[in-house]
Image 1 (cartoon, rainbow, N blue to C red):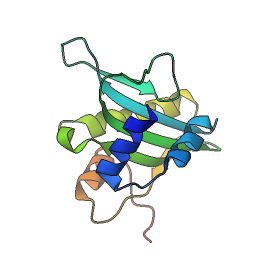
Image 2 (cartoon, helix red, strand yellow):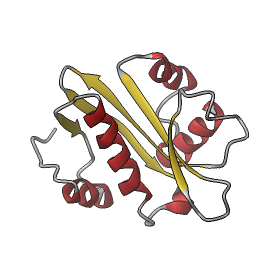
Image 3 (cartoon, rainbow, N blue to C red):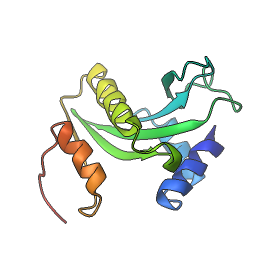
Image 4 (tube, rainbow, N blue to C red):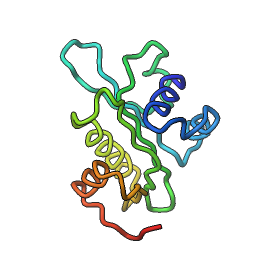
Amino acid sequence: MLSAVLELDNLCFGGLWTQEGYQRELDSPNSVLLGLFLEDSGQGDLATRKLEDKEKIKENSPPLLSMGCFWEIVDEAHITLLAVHPRYQRQGLGQAMLFALIAEAGWRGLERATLEVRASNQSALSLYQKFGFKIAGRR
């Protein structure tokens, strides 16, 4: 499964994180890494899975369409990553993944979510604004 994660990272970010970096995220109790898969049902159903859940995710799983990660910091979910395979962008998968990340944070009792985004990434900014995120500062 890590190979699919690295492939999606390369497609979306040009190799932002390494295999070791993703493994640390999978091993950390304060990190949540989710994947969005197309189910084999033939109905076009999507399924979100925690990527550390080895019983539900096999190496021959359906394609990884999207992934997202957050760090649990005190009462906050800091979203560190949200990626959608380029072939599947503009189909609502980023929205589905962001919803899944926020839902998981809520189940963990986290009170708010934060993230960083480039000012030039207008599609991401629109998505985050749709979910009620506000600009807290600029670097």
